[in-house]
Amino acid sequence: MRIYKTRTKKILGLLLLFSMVFGLTGVNAQHKKTNISSKISYRVISNAFYPIQGESNFLNAEIELNDDTKELERIDFEVPVNSFMGFNSEYLQWVGGFGSQNLRFKGNKVEKIDDKNYRIIGNLNFRNISSPLEIQMQKRDSSNQFILSGNFNLRVRDFFIGHYVSRRLVPSWIPFKVTLAFNKNDINEAS
Image (tube, rainbow, N blue to C red; front, side, top):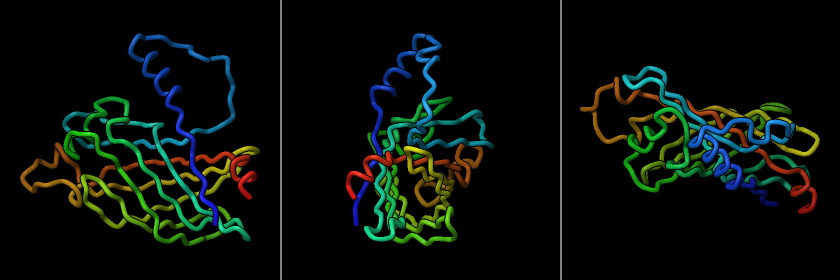
């Protein structure tokens, strides 16, 4: 088995932050890049502080492929909670308690549904609490990337302390979208 990692594009993230803070637009607008970057996002829909949404490109992920069949055997990913940017994106930090915490998924089992779809069973760790989680993921191939995309719901009551908090402030679920992109050259070189 071989383990493959995504490449975090911190410089790109800092450039985007700089352009958002200073109102610059069109940075690299002529550049037509077909590569998809790894990212994770969430959006809280029914809330008193609408809109609440965040996206992070500071997602580190690992996959494990079978040496012989090249089939997916494991997926793990991790993202710093304070790396999400967007409208009221500090909401996730508030729900999880402020600090430099990470949202971590550790896959325990991969079930292949068909050639393009997988069911990933594992544990989501947030606020030093672990909860079982299942993610449905779809595989796409481009000429130079191996891409996995999926959705999952963070069940807030598994991680948030109080029953006394209004459901208007903290919904039952926070929906997430995740895209993991791996460079095929890295995979082919390791084979």
